[in-house]
Length: 98
Image (cartoon, rainbow, N blue to C red; front, side, top):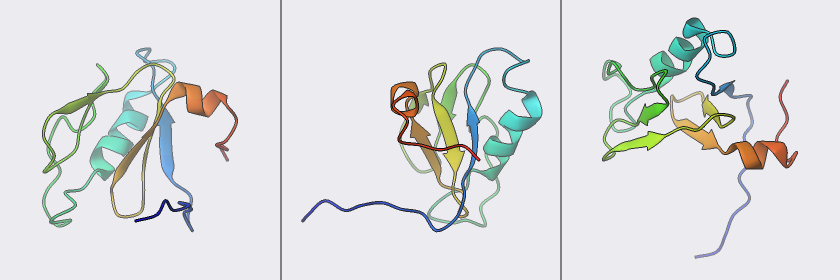
């Protein structure tokens, strides 16, 4: 097994996490939370609490929650799969916001 270069053909919907309601609007948080799908059954209804303002991210059919930290970016792809990019990686300049 070799490493791969991962590139997407489409833009991702994303938010930069913050505890502040002025920096991360509830509607923006809801856009990500509502977009997260069950990867084993994309027709499965959204589970409440997939992504909450306290910084917890739950991915259906995976065990546990992930703690999202201030400055981390949470995105969803066009299939509803969440991705987290750490604040340090974002600050490194390898990612671009459009």
